[in-house]
Image 1 (cartoon, one colour):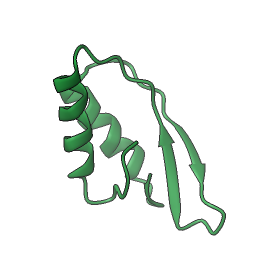
Image 2 (tube, rainbow, N blue to C red; image 1 turned 90 degrees about the vertical axis):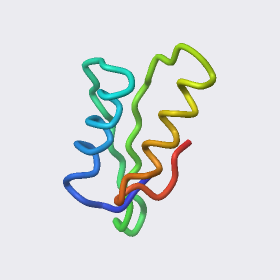
Image 3 (cartoon, rainbow, N blue to C red; image 1 turned 90 degrees about the horizontal axis):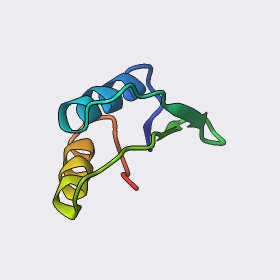
Image 4 (tube, rainbow, N blue to C red; image 1 turned 60 degrees about the horizontal axis):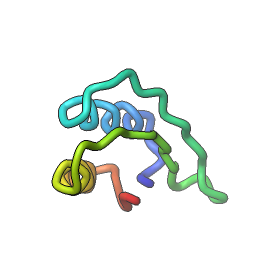
Length: 68
């Protein structure tokens, strides 16, 4: 989940492609007030460390507020 900005899905996919390359097609849903967007993407991880790395790197993105 992150700030409602056109670059949010692009930044998320770019980050994922560094750590888990794939052809991602994110689903984006706006919040009720439109201030935030939920970006949903399924990612195949290979280990707990891999998952933690992806979470950490996504959380570093300026537009991202929460990684679940």
